[in-house]
Image 1 (cartoon, rainbow, N blue to C red):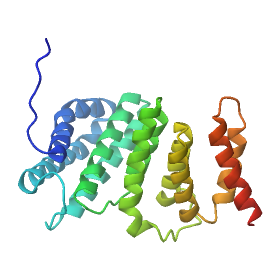
Image 2 (image 1 turned 60 degrees about the horizontal axis):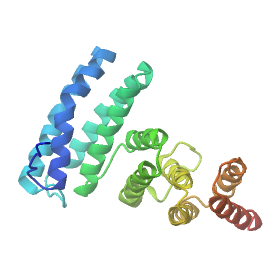
Image 3 (image 1 turned 120 degrees about the horizontal axis):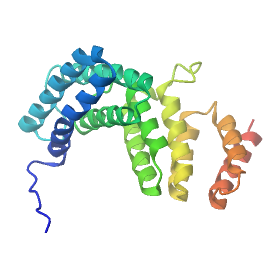
Image 4 (image 1 turned 45 degrees about the horizontal axis):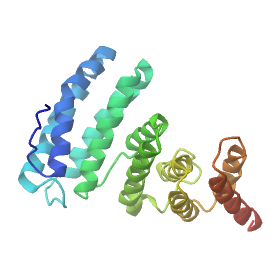
Length: 241
């Protein structure tokens, strides 16, 4: 008979505690890939300790009126971005997945506490990795929800989208990835939601996006209902040009 563990703390506190519990194994793997990551990993551990202390004092969710929290989150994300870069160079798939988990965990902490995220790019990369690794509709739907939540969180700062000459800007990649993930779920409601969001966020790029999506959707095995939704958007925005 399996012995059940009793959890203490709210959902946010449990999530932060889980990150810290997984940190030693993650640190060991990262250091094996690149010993030079030691200062980044040490700062990450101290940062996560502070996030946990804040959760204990203020609860695992809700806005924090604490000075320096945005800078703390930024520092953790920056250090994890260095680990992400080393993981990509190492070709260690488990390390890449691990750093994505930690980046998303810190991002979710910030979202729960209504703390700004900067830099956003490492979190966007982590979501892309999670989406590429997803194999089931349930996993894809989970990535969709994370991406939707991140878009809502960063919208006040990024939705003006002033860097339209940069195809790698986070606002563009987030919406393109949201739409691609929705297509892969083959869930019409998610597809419609993602397409509506993309149409609003990227008016200069929607025609090109649907043209490429339709070309890919003509391949065998693509859900017919999803293909027709892509075709309808393609016709709409090509005719509007």
